[in-house]
Length: 160
Image 1 (cartoon, rainbow, N blue to C red):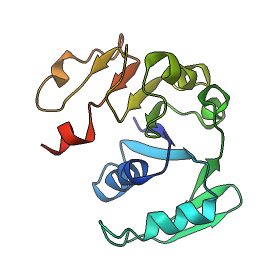
Image 2: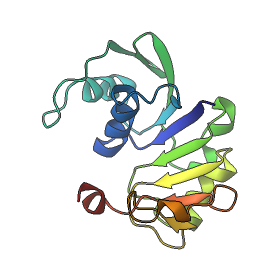
Image 3: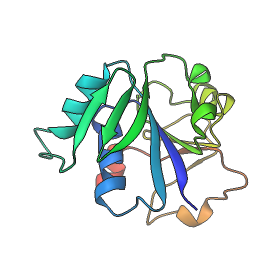
């Protein structure tokens, strides 16, 4: 099964999650179908292609008024401030990567579920989430049928 992914916040963390899927060989498991960010698609395309820390992303990247095109695949782009108004249901999103740094409580992240996503993974420490998962430490505690809002701990925790 391929899970459809939406990324909310296409800053450094959102872009690196996107690249990890594409460069890490996870494209059979995850398909990024939508990105939400307040920046225009042409800026998102440039930032995805060129990174002063991680280098150039080896992909054919272009944009239109409402999409990013990566290696011939179109990815919907929106610029919505409120998670509950995002087009996750329209795009069949299973998992949202919440990487804005703004929606780090269960109450705020729940808007993604109301918009049609099945799961939300918050890329930061969260408040009142269903579970915080640190790979290599407690991932066996994750229960897919119970946990809908998941924190991936912090960037610092994951770099250790």
